[in-house]
Image 1 (cartoon, rainbow, N blue to C red):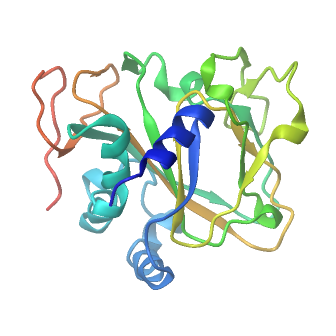
Image 2 (tube, rainbow, N blue to C red; image 1 turned 180 degrees about the vertical axis):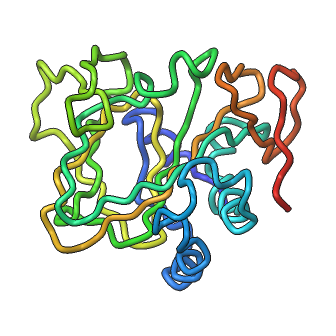
Length: 233
């Protein structure tokens, strides 16, 4: 699976691309059954691709890494993953750029592309992500997280909220986005859970400055800047 020229151009112009169909709904149901201990909080939700064969196989599916190859080339590192669960009543996710949250100064240079995979139907009513097309062209100042919030908040001065795009995803669909595109989500005022799984990709010439061992999931590492992790399979 790879992106066509129109999809690549849209990603480059807007900073994100979706929805992209990754898996059938029944495949997601099987995945959810196998990772139930993670979703319930009995296991850590971060970096499970390093320890779980099930999670690793999802991350390295051709339906995932094919489109990333179209954007970054054949040589790929998977350096982070985490589950995001937004239960009914959860607060908003402030507007932010991932570049400001965990990418810079973690990556040198700060080159990252993320995939956010819907594990539920993720619609406007249960807090789908929103994106500002074209906002990836510059880094926006951020304020530190407020009490009760996880993410920094971007300074949205000069942005027209009407230009934000809802990224509604059906179970098994995903959105691809850069570390600089501004995104956020409304509070989950519905009675429906909103679950997603995020994967973060970079390339071997990028140095990872945190004590994280990336996985080489495609191609080869010609640089040796990072100590590579062993796959769990």
